Amino acid sequence: MCINGQIDHTIFIHPVTSGNLGGLSGADATCQAAADGASLDGTFKAILSDSNEDARDRIRFKGPVYNTNGGEMVIPANQAILFDSDFMLYNSFEYIAAGTMAAEFNDLEYAYTGTDEDGYGDGADCGNWTLTSGSATRADSSSTNPGVWLDDGNTIACDSNTHIICIGGQMDHTMFVFDAANGNLGGLSGADSSCQ
Image 1 (tube, rainbow, N blue to C red):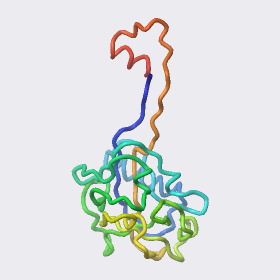
Image 2: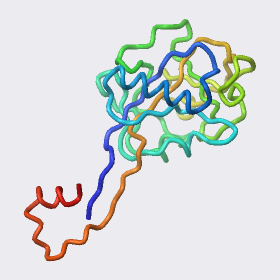
Image 3: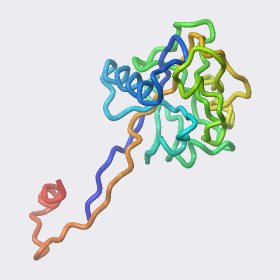
């Protein structure tokens, strides 16, 4: 049996100047560029919902999630816990990709999400992340309280300097059976090579 996929994942916030992010794809590209700039491995996406897709369905990963501040564990397991409104985060994630505390704006810890505390879109999403008018659901990245880190019960104007939340390593693991004809795989290294 073979398995692949990323094991450890990273979460950080990234500064943006408005809720016009170029849609979900633009926000994801922004997260990926920030991660690449900080030499973080993996594929990164923004924890956002719009009218077509919920964050809990966009973000798929298995394994623990760490912040960029020395690798403190934030979430121990997977997206089921990430979007459990009763779960208290282990540590906050108010750090940018480079690992320093966000210092760009006065409201340092806030981020757009358009998402309720269970990971579902709530309609407050700056016109599917294409407008600078209106308001969006706000997260508090400095909080570890259940649900608050994703929806603190307030909104933030779509023309605000704030942040988006980025997470990497959301890829699901793939498991499959390799048909070994005679069981002689050449030891563990041979078996790994066969899977690869």
